[in-house]
Length: 102
Picture (cartoon, one colour):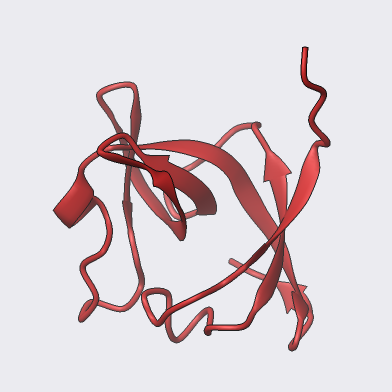
């Protein structure tokens, strides 16, 4: 059995979460746990399991989550790839502008 730490770090790449997150932002994520609509999450699309993304949880759907980026001009989210499985919830941005995220 592989043991996994409850917290892990991710680095944002791309403009899909602007203006809340920018490319280069470093985030601390809590694995598992309860997700609510509006939370920032790290997830994998069922249609693209190799792609790890940071998006906003919109609604539960088909045993997973419909997730979307905050930047309406970028559609690399559930509008293109469908339902995603959430890996964890974003807790804080720790670099370069430390702080909690809503």
